[in-house]
Image (cartoon, rainbow, N blue to C red; front, side, top):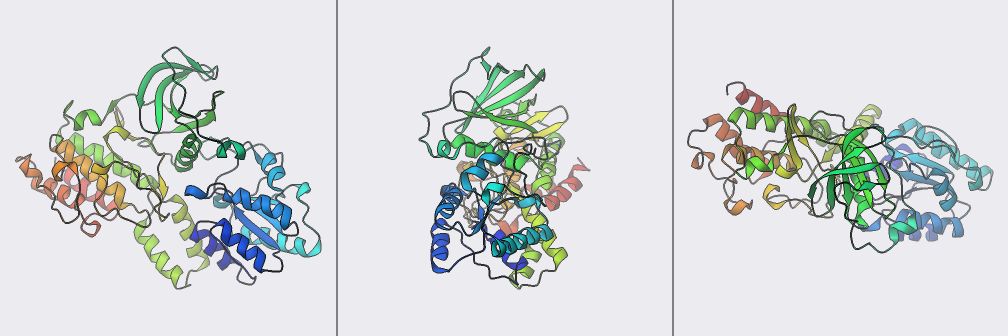
Length: 458
């Protein structure tokens, strides 16, 4: 059971000599369990996207009571840090698999061992999970993510509990969790409040993002999931996530000293053309770090649909799918200019490339008019960078009337606002902000290459 078609197909393709059924929802899974005499093994994704977040746990709890003969493997996209033993006891699972840390041979081996044991003995969940590949040992130290961050997980009942009215308010001088002293209030958005804090344990200046209400855990999980594999000078670094004694989730990131790009878009400052282009090049470099090679991904998708992927190509496809993220909210407030370049912040609505579009969160002036997608792709981020550069070069003016991108409407010629702008730069902006994705740049690398050629002559 998994809400991602990619993982359902992957397991079926790797276990062709076994009878494999799949489901993407709790009801589909229950229907299958009731229609078959008995399954040897069930692989269940614990955290499903969107409104179905608790269904994986619900199915495991149901199977523990009604289908104890079926060996249960809990699958998760990120390590269940700090709660391995509790998840084992709660759901009675025999294995824990971390999707992106298990190789294909290991996946096959773990499943086949479980099938063999199901035939030879009843499921013994009390023994705890065995090791192997991307599994976790019961009682082992919770693993860290690639960036050193191990995200604590909440109690399932806590996640389902009614939302609090809002996060607690803190003032300068307050100390959170006996460790983080508020130095400055940096800002507040729809999802969070951000503070500059002094970490009295590490003696470092950090930024603390405090999330609002029950949406806090999901926002923290998404942001760490996005950032834990990105290590790039133009992307904010995340250090830790936790929960206050008041029940509010928070995220600790590097404190970035600099100016918000919003100051330059709204007229509070002015960048020279080459400085503005350098900002865009920094943002494109950041996108290259977490966007996939979409051209290659399309090629592999086409081969996959024909059932023609080799083992090496399947590995490559998995890596591209895992790496590919869309930020979804590239805008001036999420970019800080520092002495060493621009930094991209705020990944709490980031999505994996190819994921179904369930919400249209984002900032309308920076969303392409053809963003009525069924699955997320990189065009959303590329368009936003084009609009940002247009505004920086054209005194804050937007490429569309009323700052509202509309399909079928032409981009306002940059020379309307900047008669002295170079012709090649005006052409770049017109293409980058085109209303139709077919007329825009297709990858961050392609866009970066074109802009570098222009920058060389500025």
